[in-house]
Image (cartoon, rainbow over all chains, first blue to last red; front, side, top):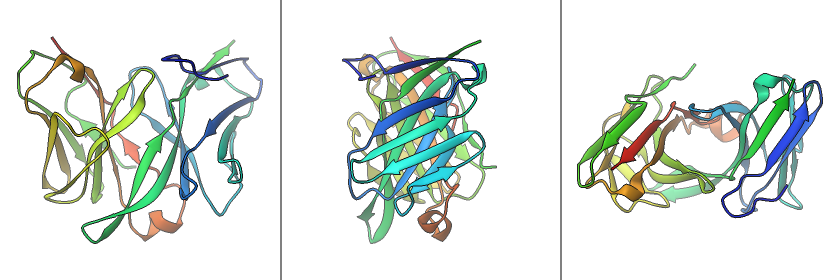
Length: 118
Length: 119
C-alpha cells in the first residue's frame, strides 16, 4: 500500500504465506542497498543487502530484488512466520566525499509494517 | 558479531538540560553515526564521524553536537534539550574498508536505541 501522512504502509499475511515488501529509492547513483527488520523496542537488524551490479540475491528464506530502471527494491520472505512480524526498512547508500575521504551516506525509506497471523 | 551498545534504553530529561547519549562499538569500526527515528519520518541522520575527532553534519544537526575522542565511542550531545527532541535515538557503525566497498554482508550495525523524552 501507499503511505498517507504519518501512516506506514502495512502488509498482513497468514502464517506460511510468502510476503513481498516493496521500496522505491530516490538516488540513481546509489550502489548499495540494505533491508532491515525492526521489532518493537529494538534497533534495526540487518537482513540482507545487494549491490547495484546485481538484480537478485537470496538468503535464508529471504530474497532481495533490485530493478534499477525504475529504482525499485523488494524483499520477499518465504513461508512467513509470526516471528517475522516487524517493521521492515529499505536503505540506500550513496558515496560522498568529505575531508579527502570517501564515505557512504545511508538514506532510509519510511518502513512497512508486516503482521503475520497464526 | 559487531556489538553496538547504547548506554541508556530510556531517558527522561527536562527542557533546557544538557543531555549526553553514549554509544560504544567493539569492532574497531572507523565510522559511527547518530540517527533519530520518529513515526512517519523514518530514520534521519543527525551527525556522523569517519575518524577520531572528525565529525560531519547529517541532515538534521541543529540542536545537537557530537564528540568522538576515542575510536570506540561516539557521543551525541543535546546542548539544551527541547520537547521537539523527544525521539528514539539510534547509533550505528560500519567499517568503510575494502570489504564494504565491494563485498556483501557489511551492513551497518545498529544499537538498540535510546528513547528520550524531554518534558
